[in-house]
Length: 196
Image (cartoon, helix red, strand yellow):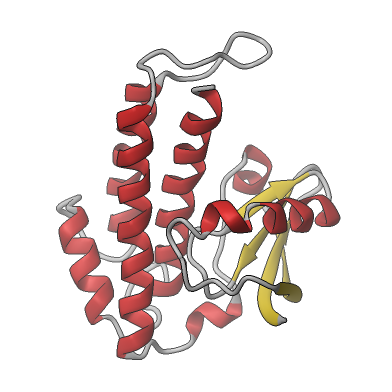
């Protein structure tokens, strides 16, 4: 049984649980227990981008942060203290590989999805192409948080692979990888779920 470190971002109406060393594996729930349960339930889906994730895992909460308005809205809000650790070459490579695999999964899911997706309970929600465009638009903002102005995925991945300093700009690299991969996977799974 492998123990995986998780941090929580807790706001009054929503909590995120995030695996510290597995970028993008973050899920939310109304309570801490809900968030942790949902995170564990998504392990098999997450393995599509991180096949080395151990099969038998136990989640250990190592840090709890107060969530903010972004948390309540449904987005990650801040890095945890462990994100300040320097990156080794192997760490940087693994983070970049998972981010790239997340983009690949989104592309694969979008390619097999209908253009018009099933709507939510009140008739809302974006269709496939609007979701893909939203992800690309958000990334341009995310990349600026680590000093990349071009909006280029290639430039982001190259910088991530070369990164050793934990906090070159507003976001530490570990958090930047987590935030980018989480947003991509969250919407990839949304497309997948609304395609059926």
